[in-house]
Image (tube, rainbow, N blue to C red; front, side):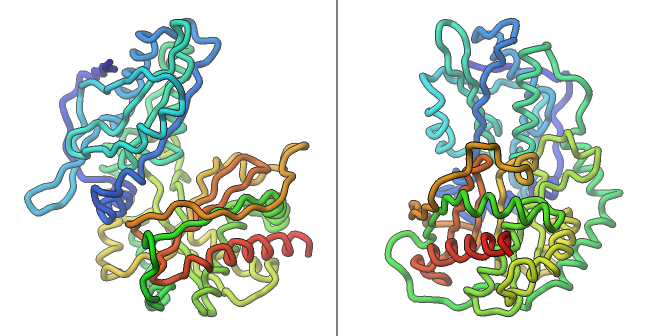
Length: 417
């Protein structure tokens, strides 16, 4: 099936926005064999109050949402010199499948996007008794980040309930125009900050003998105790739980590298300005956090790290190509990505949840990745999950469990102190 969209506009060709350029660099680094790793999805239950939920109605609603946001109808191509640019379509059709269950979303995520030809959104419908129960959406990361995907989910639900969402959101092409004009001065300040914070080389810089199996090994910790403790510390230090986990991870990887100062690059959503609150694109970029990794007490560590984290968030909106040039193509640092919604990272854990023992498990490894060490945080309140991925040429696979348990101990002890 096809969800048709019509805007009445001509195709538009332009540069990538800064956030798009950032994720494009990561995607092209791993190449076609592994770029599907960056695909992500949302499963959208159809609202019970929707006037109609037949297949035709839901497919039309998908077309309305795609027409509303130009990033959902953009394709990335390369010029004669190999530089990326994008073409936003004024009309077209998004493919839609009918599937048996929401479990199909994993299969859809595993299909790579042909960036030059495919639309950056694919959809599938779970149908029962002639009614669409769920809509599966898979996003190309160049077109959207997690926050933007949640905006798309909201707009789809509103379209099914009311016919169309209210208001006119900022468009991707408006963002690109601003980044060539009034936003340049903000980018320059961010670039100066990054250069001033340089540690003089990559954090993990001690090559080890090649390990067996995939080069990038992964491990995950499920820790209700660290979840509870991070929320206590968040209230104590006037930050959210994401900042607590970021600082803890940064300090631990610095200690693993044997350095007195440690750096980590958190993914920052960059939606501080009101005009960015509704734009659907990949707006998130990496900030740069540098802290002392020595203090054993977490509260002592936070005394300096709180201000450092705020500076990192403030300087995460910049021209990615210009930063690459200023840093001279430096090696990637250690990345931190909290994929939980901001609304859930600082609230108390609901009664009856968050109990249970800590569990650490290995995960399947990867052959290609764009950084040496990554931390991904997911989970609902009371069900914290942290996955670390490490290049085994710089950090042994057996060190991952030690690092995760050390992170839990640091946070839990800090909350008790």
